[in-house]
Image (cartoon, rainbow, N blue to C red):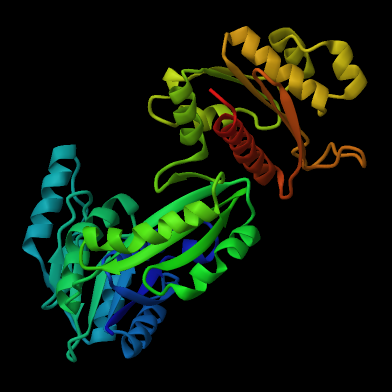
Length: 416
């Protein structure tokens, strides 16, 4: 089966100064299009090494897809390396030059001579227009018919070029008639190992659709991937398997595909005609940010209080100072009082709170780093003790996810 390999170019990636999100995006889009990706590589801004990586990849694969190194500066060397690898020279692509001249004229700036090199492409290549930047991409061809598709490294330029030009080329080139269709089932409150235990036979026994379990911070996804000629065929393949998995994970699947814990909570609140207020200490506003990131959140989410200092817990949430003194800010008593205070102060039907030790300092043997209390104040107030692992940022993220998961389970299980 024809395949491609991916090459991301950039010394800043190798130095850890830039996270390579391009490779993940490309791999996902090619998988969806039914194009097999057999390997991915990162190479620094070195002409000889880039050329060597391309030559080696073309010995294994039908084609190579590269990102980065197409700009006007001295360290942008991908085009030259492709020419070296394929034994080609360059030629001027007039439409790209005219496009660049027009862009600079519109900005009222002169175009420097080094920009002209962006319009010089490997001879005989297929140009890839770039309406979002100055550097065109290209698909260059070796004498044996194999190819290199090169795109800019700037994501806002690369993504539309990939989707609109490179993927159609690859599908036609490889005669890809089937695509990968994906359904993601989002779970919360159940561990990856327990999911695996419950669906192990489905995981092992299904080749198309394939089943995968992916763990996140305090939750996990079950991914179903079907290779099919069209969406309707894929749905017929995925549907029965999805129903069986959801049956086995009943009470833990909070949504599908684009759903998030926050969107699932807000959907339940809307269904119940209820409103929510939050009080945050250790999560520092992440709960509110997750909720307000959902379109239409204002129909159910009233607002929140980030009460980091104990004085704010007392003044804004009516937490009794004596309770804090006796039990400590990180305690069941204070978590309950914060949730109640948020609910009362903002006039909500439900209050949700977090208080904990995010670290790296402040932990004790009795209250170690990672200890978090989550409380819900509704008709039957309750608090949950969590012991989370990770650095400060990870604990804050996991506490946010856990709190939303707790509230979702609470709303999902309790009568309206």
